[in-house]
Amino acid sequence: MEEFSDVWFKQCAVIEFLTVEKVPPIEIHRRNQAIYRDQCVDVSTVRCRVRQFKDGELGQADLSDKT
Image 1 (cartoon, rainbow, N blue to C red):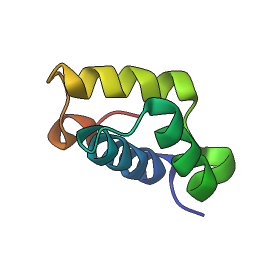
Image 2 (tube, rainbow, N blue to C red):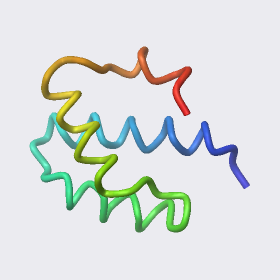
Image 3 (tube, one colour):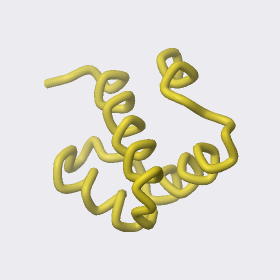
Image 4 (cartoon, one colour):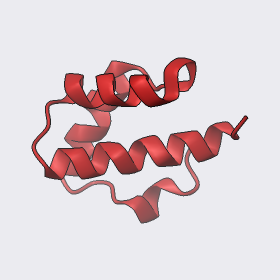
């Protein structure tokens, strides 16, 4: 099984990519859930990250040390 930080980083990458593609947060969460199942971040976390990406607060370089 993958480390949580690896799964977290991958999910954040998906969130960032799909945010640029203008996919709604609930759909991003559904897609992550289909892949990561019980390791999927909560929908509220997805919404928060989408907001941060849109506001320019986060990029992938900022996520490497967050868990």
